[in-house]
Length: 369
Ligand code: UDP
Image (tube, rainbow, N blue to C red; front, side):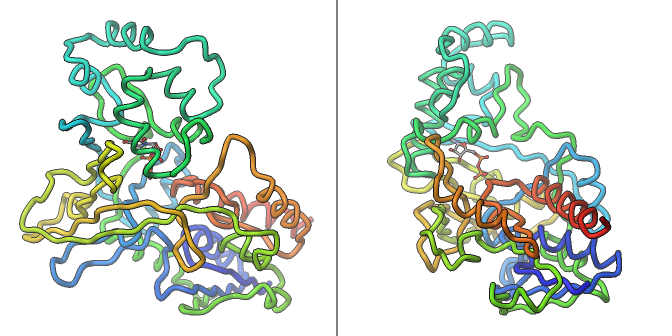
């Protein structure tokens, strides 16, 4: 079959490679001048630092098949994400762990004592938290919520946390020990030569052609036996029912000498600091040495028509607009919508790859029947 794809990010790269190895011909149109979507990495010419151009991406997963897949294309170096938080004039450890709790409350709790203390802070009358705020009240209580989550979340989403789904906060663990690994997954690492080289290797197959700076238009679907669309779902329909809301990010890049902030990610949780975090990219590759440093100050705002969409905005009240587009998409027989933008989901890289493998399986299943 001749298969068309819109986008050369992780989703389409995985699907393209899997189908190319099964003998299908793949033509990919990518509007950007590079592959790898928002996980694109590029070595900065001046400093030599590997820069996460669209913000930090740390690979972590519990999915052994996904971990094996990425390691087929790239050597992954050991990396543990340890995030710090500047709040109320102090530096804390994230995610919330025993160190954070003891430092914040000025205590020397043991794990058992801390658990009992937080349980007293928590609102145990909430049995089934629906919103971000309810999830916080139930599991960490008002004081920690207001110090670490309320301000940051208002900056990140510009929505009252009462209207955001609990799932956003469930991304972060709460620990009653000193484990400050931001992620709770078995496998974690950083690609030795960056994500873009990894994706280029996935796409390096005689059955795959990639056109950069080129768009696959919905009107072109008929040229292919099947199309995988990883662009925005609403863009496929010309935004006919309206625009699905996204958050976009602005990065204020600055350089420094040596070590600027001492860690890869420093969150700024107070609402009066306009940015959400500063990332210092050399720390994402601790096995490399560079004299100079490249940092990004990260600002979140509503995504306009000409901005790069980052985070889909899901609200607790549900989303009729999304449902309308999903109903349209369900009618398509020759188009599969994939990835963060195509399925309008807040997806980590490993979840993206898992979903891509599942899309391959269902495509093969449907076309063998
Ligand atoms: N969050 C927060 N304070 C923090 C870190 C995260 O309030 O210091 C909230 C915020 O709403 C964010 C969500 O938790 O959108 C998920 O955080 P994560 O670090 O997973 O965000 P990502 O790295 O995907 O931007």
